[in-house]
Length: 277
Image (cartoon, rainbow, N blue to C red):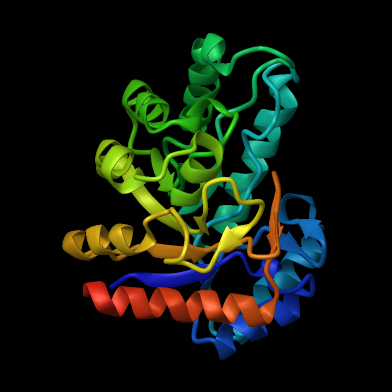
């Protein structure tokens, strides 16, 4: 049975309000990213303890650490970034989640990321080596401008690194917005499907500045959910609608629109036979 999760910082900045909202919407998981306007990677231990308590108080679990790991240029020093990744691993263990959401780097300014394949793979391999004996998995999200902006490059990462510690996040809207693809379930999903461990639910219309209610854009959300139904997918579907604002490091939707997005996903899942809690 698929499980609903959410980047609830799109609902409200207040973390207590985030978990309260999700509990009221019967969403059992949260993907923490911004907590009281601070990135989860930058919280003090006291703030982390309070966030963990609030999650538990509302009976929620953490689907993944919504980290920005890999959202830096390749000409920035790797050592400090690798230390930051180590902290993300600590956070995954602290919040008792198996996944760290991450990315595959930007090129030097004005350059083509395709020219930096070997450097990207070296960095990915270094992170995999760090977690080889840790109960944590990196899940790489396809996104514009990073190395893994295409389905082919996402698969290249996983197959070349060749470790169960690196899997994929599938985000259909990022293919619409970044790659201008309106048939992602036909052209991208078949390539990535064997390696996908996590799903983001975000829909988008070609040429739009903000997201669409799931099922109303060009992201083929209904078709994707139908594919997941066939697979009897039992991972998380993390809501990230971007219905008011969408940006490089987050977005905004607000409670009313977010509730509409959740309802739409539940309705579409029911139509295609995907059991979803």
